[in-house]
Image (cartoon, each protein chain N blue to C red):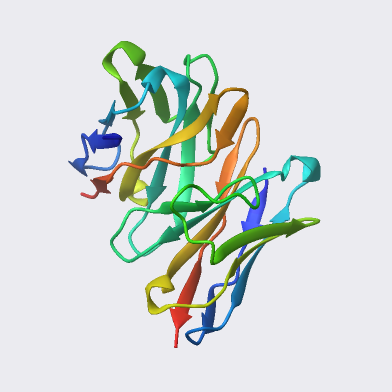
Amino acid sequence: QVQLVESGGGLVRPGGSLRLSCVASGITFSDYYMSWIRQAPEKGLEWISYISSSGNSIYYADSVKGRFTISRDNAKNTLYLQMNSLRAEDTALYYCASDRYCSGGICLRAFDIWGQGTMVTVSS
Amino acid sequence: QSALTQPASVSGSPGQSITISCTETSSDVGAYNYVSWYQQHPGKVPKLIIYDVSNRPSGVSNRFSGSKSGNTASLTISGLQAEDEADYYCSSYTSNNRVFGGGTKLTVL
């Protein structure tokens, strides 16, 4: 069954670091672009980063550029998000999601598969 | 970078139709072609309901439809049901950016 499972969230002090992981199963992970999306408590969705299927193309939202690093290990079917210099405003539920998938010349450019999310709380 | 504007809330009675708009403000107007919509019930994971402006994923009710005119995309829900009460988000996808609208809370009266 198709599944994305995030882990690595927790409570961290301002200025601290965390590394999130997202393990995929039931899909050919190396065929998918992947994104990290977050949702602060009682707020809307915010896209923060994507990585291409090979890892050669990476983009970030301005809000996290220079502090967060996305990466992937296709051999381990795992997506990562290294978060440094964390701020209170980074407190959110962090989702990994499939971002783009192409098959037979047709591409789905949307967040089709979502994990359950991992909570990150930045507080002193 | 682009920004997507949605109404904060809309409401409708069971059986009625409602439309949620999503207006893009960007210098890259031509890139506003990959619009998707997501439904999120309280405490739940967002669910893709429309992609590429007007396509429905398998399993999504045909009561949900999408369209676009100029810089404004729209999600229409026909035959409103109580279970449609949720938050709805639009999203725009370009070669180097993705962005979500602020979300719209749908209340079924």
